[in-house]
Amino acid sequence: VQLVESGGGLVQPGGSLRLSCAASGSIFSVYGMGWYRQAPGKQRDLVTTITSGGTTIYADSVKGRFTISRDNAKNTVYLQMNNLKPEDTGVYYCNADVTVRYGLGPAPFWGQGTQVTVSS
Picture 1 (cartoon, rainbow, N blue to C red):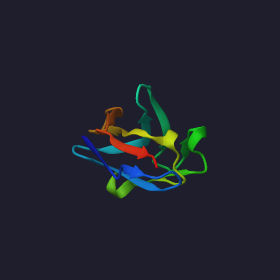
Picture 2 (tube, one colour):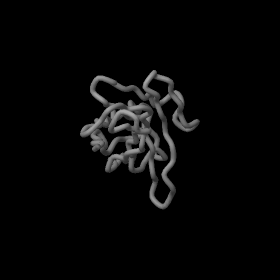
Picture 3 (cartoon, rainbow, N blue to C red):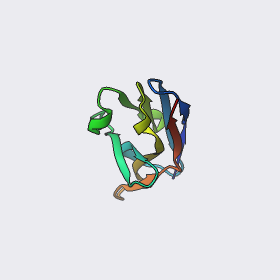
Picture 4 (tube, rainbow, N blue to C red):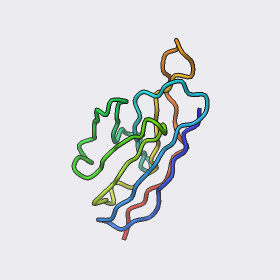
């Protein structure tokens, strides 16, 4: 199973970016999907998650600014980031809980990360 992220880059404060993450490979079912970020010198923290049914959770720091969504038919999750702040800077990692065969429990998979830099 591979998770491939795209959409990172450099943006000015107040700007917007949209990240995408597509899961591919030997997939039977995809459960929860989410985004985490890691700022320089800090641990990887949860940004937001979404279940296969569409239930979402957001970190307090991004509520009202970020929106997570997913396309279950494409095994893809998106992160729309608006009103970006310098403290949003970091490497954003996609995560998905995937079963690769009927009868097996889900296992977590991670993308390679995409850099988001918010700076003037």
